[in-house]
Length: 447
Figure 1 (cartoon, rainbow, N blue to C red):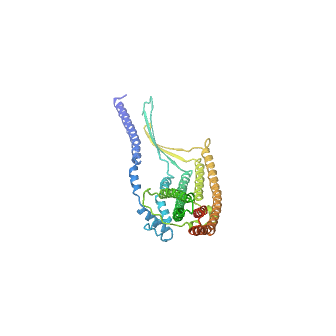
Figure 2 (figure 1 turned 90 degrees about the vertical axis):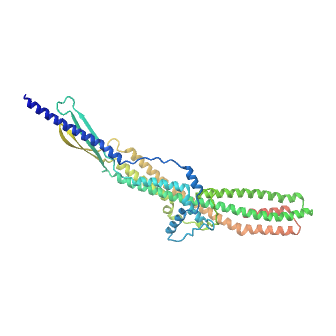
Figure 3 (figure 1 turned 180 degrees about the vertical axis):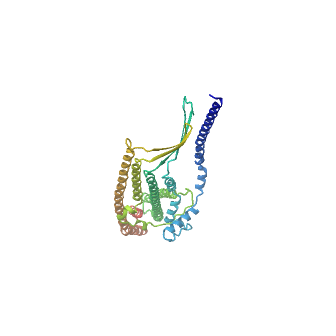
């Protein structure tokens, strides 16, 4: 072979190898650059340590005059057709104003609203396509007299043809609405808890006032009894009955005062204000809140049923999503590389076949969860109807009992006490009868 031909062949081989190395280097470089671009688009993590000391200080300094409460009251005015709520704490806090404060500061409601942020974030990021998958194949041909290296790069992209992403979006939105409905239910429960605590404190305040009046009357009777005892009209044993009753009522009054202090703390806990916050409670009536309403539209008006109906819709979307998942999504895999010194473009297609698995487990579980959701809302409806019937009976009975006490019992015991006291002032004292009349009058006012 001519030496020039050998040199030409060697030069050609050198050029081929150079091109091959350049292709390999370019492919490797592209493969290395892709992760760099990926990392550049990723979010970074930054730790956020807890600052409980700062929160404790902020909580203990919390006041009802904050801008959050006033702003929330203005929003309620806008919802209520612009009717003014007269939110003014200068004359004490009423029950309606306290409910507004609780809706802003209550701990459980604040946590529930934060949980709604989780479902909102899920809904905002639902239905996203799967990230593309970058692949790189590098092959060395052993014993090859020609080019020993082959390089191919590819990017796999999944096309969601099954429609599962649309269902995922709908499911996430319904789940967020269900969470908002649960928050509305919790807000109503907080208002009910506040009304109960408010009513309990009002009852204790009434009992304390009645006991103070009772002790005042008892002191007047004891002065009469002591004068009669000094004149020898009654024995010391009979006089001591009144002193013992006064000591017992004073002890009971101290217990009621302690119960009122605990009731004040309960109200503060529901409101979400510090235990030592300045809080002057104004007298408020619950008469407007005690009017029964027919449960004809209970399924639409009850907040618990509304939340359960949305959770049932979530179960429906979950089942639909599981069924859509058994249908194949198409994955396309375009690639580029060199083989035998030639540049090549490759296009691959892949799709799963629902033969052995078919997402059967998830579908069966979703069907069962839908049955559970349906049973939950039906059971809740039955329970609420029974609760409403029982509450209606209790309200009717309590109303009749109150009318009987106010119109019949209290006038009788007042008349009996006035009669016995008039007899005592004339010097004719029946200690047991007087004490019994006084005690019955007190019991009637505490019913």
